[in-house]
Amino acid sequence: MFHLYLPIAGNSVNIFLILGLGGFVGLLSGIFGVGGGFLMTPLLMMFGIPPTVAAASDSNQIVGASTSGTVAHMRLGNVDIPMGVILLIGGVAGGTVGVQVIKLLKAMGNADFLIAITYVIMLGGVGGYMFWESLQGMRHDNGMPIEKKKSRPVVEGRKSFIQRLPFQYRFEKSGCEISMLLPLAFGILVGVLAAIMGVGGGFIMVPVMVYLLRMPMHVVVGTSLFQILFTCVNVTIMQAWSNHTVDFVLAVLLLLGSTIGAQAGTAVSKRLNADQLKIMLASLVLLVCVKMMAGLLMTPSIMVSLKGGH
Amino acid sequence: MKDIHINRICCTLICIAVVCLSWCGSASAAEGAVSLKLAHTTLRITTFYNGTTLKASGIVSADADVLLHVIGVKKDVPLKVKGKVAGLLWMNKTDVELENTPTVYMIYTPEKVGNDLLLSQLDMDYNAMVKDVALLGIGYKALVGDIKITPESADKKFVFGEYVKLMEKSGVYGVYNGTVNYGPIRDGQKSFMVTLIIPPKMNAGTYLVEAIAVRDGAAIAHADKKLTIELSGLPRLIASLSYKHSLLFGIMAVAIAVAAGLLIGVLFKGGGEAH
Image (cartoon, rainbow over all chains, first blue to last red):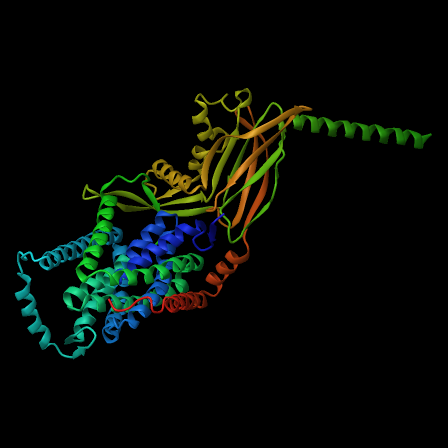
């Protein structure tokens, strides 16, 4: 009772458990604008779903969650479509390069190690920096002096270089005028990392837009969801077509939870300021980082695993 | 007169044949013939399937014991063996492949091992015996002998042992002690009954259920039945679409996800303003 059989995963799952997982990740998606792939895939694997099926079906559910989130944010005027399209083009190009990098690493026999290390470094670096800067911002809001602002001169120096780049464009929603090459380059970088790490890349894209492109946080969330939507449409179709790993029933269950969760998350994010949003996302990213690090350091209970996917 | 003589010869020959046949039959029973019957030979995986159980029963000689095992098709299983990198980090490190390895392997043993039949040739305790009845050609120890590992330099016993742990965790490998129950003895025979566990991870396919009669530590007879597990209804439709119309399936999955997202968006319209 209350179980559904997943024919592609080859296992049955508790309906309410999957609805709850979807709802939880959808909530994060709505609040932070991240797809949640970095969190959902390991969670599904913990409940007996094969890694390749978990990753592909998760992409499918992110399509639904990010559609819901994108629509909600578009209604609020939080999506910078030109910025999103350029990031998407970069992301697709970078993803293609990343897939080739993975092939090369696998041939060298050390792909898994590099993937895990990339995860820990990226999650730790991004999460740590976001956490530290949000704390600084919150202390500043409370009237406490900020200890140092050494990064400012560097940013100013970078601005002048950025302004000299060709294809300058005024991104109205983001409130900045920069070269289109800049988001394209970041899109490629994130695409490469996302392909290596096997996730949508929202948790990398958000800090890139906040800290490197200096976009307002709420536009970042909407634009990130917009970019993730199209990335995951591509991934879902490709995975279903070439690998047969999209489990429709699992995706529908996750969707039911995550689409509702995404709406709830959008409502929750209204009540939080930018620094609170950032510090919560940073805490989440750091938590996943610590869990992964613990997994690398602790002796496994079973010394073999079935080969398949990364 | 001649006809009567021929008839007598024929009658005598027939009688001899009948006596021989009945003698052979009784000899067979005495040697521990075993029969096996499954409550169902086909199980269907439907939408709300979460594994099931299956009654298996049969008759065995009173002086023999019976073991049952369930075996899946044999396949080559690629594995990653974990190891430490830089003396610190545990990672999937080495590629190995277990060849000719059954996808499902379960053993069911009797509640009491009558006459210590199984123990007679093995100087070990009961628990060790049921995991290790290699002399009968069943059990993990016997199984590892049939399996090859690539590369050959890999530690086969260690890798197989860890693989067994992994499979036992998902429910497709297992040794179920004391699960075969006997009925009363009648005419030198006794009935047996066991409830087989069919976990949800036991996928669609054909499996062999085998009953082995054992006396004095040796297998003296066996009977088997094929068990078919097949997809039915929605799971069958989805599996068929996924494998036979994969591109259409991918586009459909995306379309439904987008539609669901839009629908939820419409339902929540007005629920979210600028923040």
